[in-house]
Image 1 (cartoon, rainbow, N blue to C red):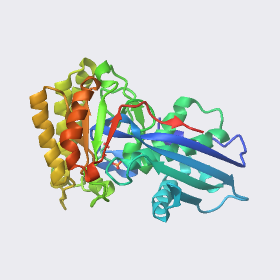
Image 2: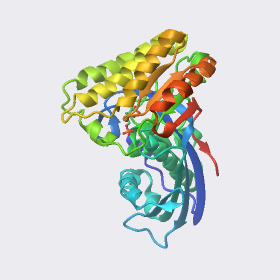
Image 3: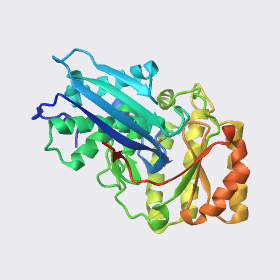
Length: 361
Ligand code: PMV
């Protein structure tokens, strides 16, 4: 598929008004996306587990304007409260996707959204938020062009979500989603995420992820700024090359259920992501003291308990604790007894691998 193929053919149906709701999950990258080219094209391929509990529910209500406009008409509400702060981000998104969704200037929209986790906490609320919005917009387009296939629907939803937030491309369909071209992953694309096409051992099909909310405040440096700092970064090329290699190594690890191999790739990816931040110009640190306390506790516990618990990080201070389902009782007890103290207000979210977005209405 090329970008042009996402420009729709003239709409065949006329729709005056409607309402659609989607629930879309967050995801946690195992091999990280950090650095991008123009038009949200990733500098390297990435892969993520789709989450189940951390999700955004978005409802879009739409009503046709008397005549097409030159601008976009929409209101946004978060948890029932009008959010003027969200408007610029959505306006930019609408600008970017307008050529692929020409109906955007023919309707006025009410976008109502709610998250199951704190906004801007580093739990990739942009991934679930942008994918939920993209899915609602695709549902509107499907009403206008009902002959589209489900595969096209999913691909275009991921394509649009990517234009809102890169990692959102991985939140549409599948439990393990790969985004970005990789020589050994057939069907992989820089334009949208695909369900991981290779063998995945059963141990990874219901993996657990407990998100420790170390710092729920607004991040000091946004992902957009962070991605940008990979331009001219002294270690950029090596890092992009490493991501390709890690994806290759992960193929065997995922197929064989090699938990130790998994731990070593995933933890290294997390630390590399943050190392890129610490070595960019200007440099910055998103981890907090408690992030490091938690990492050290996890390493000590893993050694003592002989479990396969490991950690990964997003672009923030929060820690994702990953472990197999059959070690859940032991690891969750450890989290409650020893890690909760490092979380803001003792808060954490038990999550696990899910299957992707769902249409609610
Ligand atoms: O989707 P963005 O632009 O917010 O970038 C997020 C990048 C990371 O979460 C740090 C890594 C990833 O692959 O999700």
